[in-house]
Image 1 (cartoon, rainbow, N blue to C red):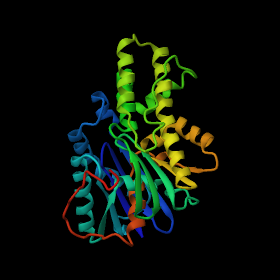
Image 2 (cartoon, rainbow, N blue to C red):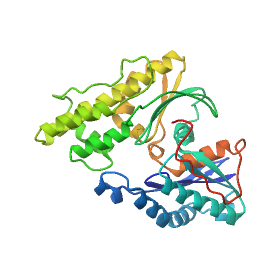
Image 3 (cartoon, helix red, strand yellow):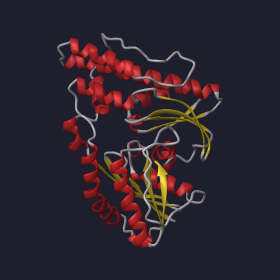
Image 4 (cartoon, rainbow, N blue to C red):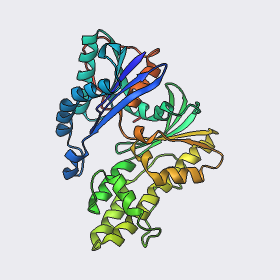
Length: 331
């Protein structure tokens, strides 16, 4: 079975082809960072328009690069939520109409579930159950994954997501969008900091997160200072560490409490190199799995993979009815 995966929940247009026998055939992603960068965040209407412009050319390019005919596709998987309503409608409309024209079925995919299982695209030694930390620009969620479709959400952010706070602090520091990579670059210029920021909820018994207070603390400090390269680097250094401290502490605590050996860390923030390095240093007896860097941010590969994974159990559709869901079972 060859599955076409389509991702359009936010500001990346991602398409991929997955073969149930051979694995991932190929994937392609168009980022809209240049479009939204000057606004400091994603503008939904502009995101939708760019998806409309890019979907057909990207599909043509993907098929051509991998020498696959459109008629070799057996199933189309697409992101049905959560996400921005306009971009979701765009991707769903494209997927449904293409499936209808090819007389094949389509399957709706939960964007967050796709992220959670994304390490399995390349990692064959990852077995259930596992603890999942999904950390991105829109979400910070800690989940016990017992089996396929058997999940227990242990905790989530009560306000801002970790990725969102990275973006907002970067903006106050005068750094480019998206903020996560820029914060990491600035932090890499020093190995110490004159500033010490709070580690919110790090000692609480629950597994929830809260980053809005940290964001306020950092931005209030920034507003009092005359920024230069050294100050920016030192602020970025402890700010990045403060978020990583909280994420690692709560994730390892959950793994120990539930006696789970395997841990998955996925979502856009999982691409953070310091987070990856520190996880491997502090994991102890636990095994930690990250998605391949190419599959960390939003992409069609994870949509194609989870679509195939669920194709034998989940209802597939041949209708043109579109019903995107901006919410999710995880939030």
